[in-house]
Length: 247
Length: 227
Image (cartoon, rainbow over all chains, first blue to last red; front, side, top):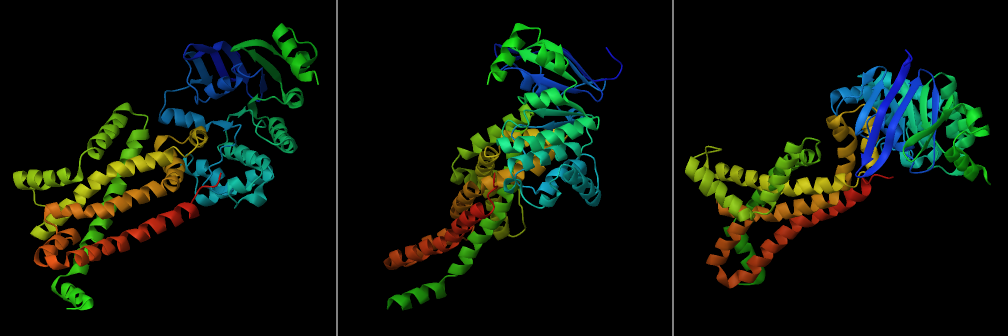
């Protein structure tokens, strides 16, 4: 194990009833690394992403964030989740709160920042993702792409050690995909540690330090983007790439 | 005597408005009590602690399925008569407080279920997003789930409030001088005016209840969470 592994997934198994969705997963993510999880639907990549902040529990194995094993549900787990940003497929902005309040809720109620401090922080992050002019609107008044960028700002407001992206562009209209991917690429360039589940192959190739390819709940292949896209080793990966690049 | 003369004689002999005012006051205090208790019960029923969930469920099933008249009788004949537990020095206030408490306890079960139906209108992703930024159960419930759940449960809460307003008539069992008790004694002494008396009290309740329905319909539209 490398010394500065930020996320360590060791021997993780998960079952949904009889269905074995994660099979002996081992994965290490170093500080500043961008890991992209690829695989056909049902391969377990989203489930793996969600186990890292324990939105999904695991049946066996161990997950460590910055050297600390994920605690049981409770205050300690909440504290740890504050260190792990998460961006969801369906944005999940708090529907009854303004954009600004969506971003300030965590800093105020978890970090204990004052209203002014939290709003200053929130505005700078909203500016960074380019939606500061929407701060006083409600989520439903924004486009999908704007909502997802707010969701990224909300996660960043907790100053997380690592960011999880669970298919962040899958629910977006095609013309809005790029604005979200651009935000993610600039985040990666700033050195954010990221674990991303996506179907955007262009983005994967451009932004990833490492591609992790899953099929049927197993990690089948782990390599650099160049290696993976030009010279995949496993039959499963060849088949997968053949299907998506076919058109 | 003409119709209007009969009516004014009745109103002169009996304090009809005063009796209705008692129903309004019972409704007010029991509504607050049942809302607070019902919210706590709803929190218990959605909490991650199995024993709390169990207790909340048991309360709802026991109370919701017991007739209000029986609870009211139990409070007066059981608690007050047997244990001599006085809640106020004057008889009148003592019975009023007993009635308000029983009404609150009873309707809390319905408030709990109304709020829980509201919780079901909040997508699960809202709670996941709240947990993901590090909020634990109580702050998640307080800042994210409940504000949305309440907006989604205004209509069933309004129904509960309407039922509560009318159920205040059961307080007559606890010797509270409210409208339905007065109606009974008015009919007893003026049986020739039975239809008019009935009409007066029916209209009285309609006047109290209709605004509740209008208000909750308006509020549920106005406060709906746009998704």
